[in-house]
Length: 265
Image (tube, rainbow, N blue to C red; front, top):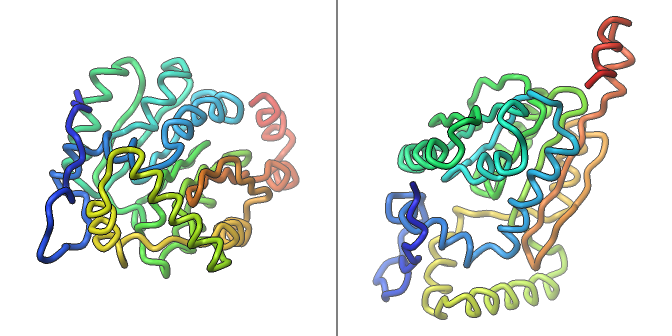
């Protein structure tokens, strides 16, 4: 089981050279504290995922948590939905994250069908799914790869399926963006981070976390084929979107037998 008592102190001492940020064992050890103190609204987003799934997920459907880290999405869904309501596959590049996620899922949600695999979401062989979640994951992929990933995820979703995308964003207006960044740093200070920690982590994340504008996310999702995209949450320069794959296109092409089955979902 994950020990959430480890405090994030990775950048609390002066460094001669700040290395690029990576999800290594040091980060894994303090990850729950890091996300709690670094991502505005993280707990609220997790809490709503179960509510969103309860409303939109076909019973028994498969769910992907891409960039799953310690498996918080699976636990959030398991806390809201019965064991037969979904099957979840979490995917992450970090073997340490995957190992800890498995331990936690077994300890906290042993009756739910939750599995974890180590892999690159750009090259995964996706199975049909009713819901796909990317919680602060796309921002770590090279910008040139993002369109193709979203297109593949659209193809993997069942008709009527949803994609939830949470990301750090950058405002299009320079002055607005500067204000949001300043208030985000205030948020981190209020959560116990020093100016040195904030500065050193910002340096470590340069060219590792490259945010898009909210408009760019909407455009990418629309171009991939999603019929509706809604920004349902924003706190400073962090946002979460839900994108819907239309049922109508399926119904237009489906046989009468398939339509009858689809209406029962």
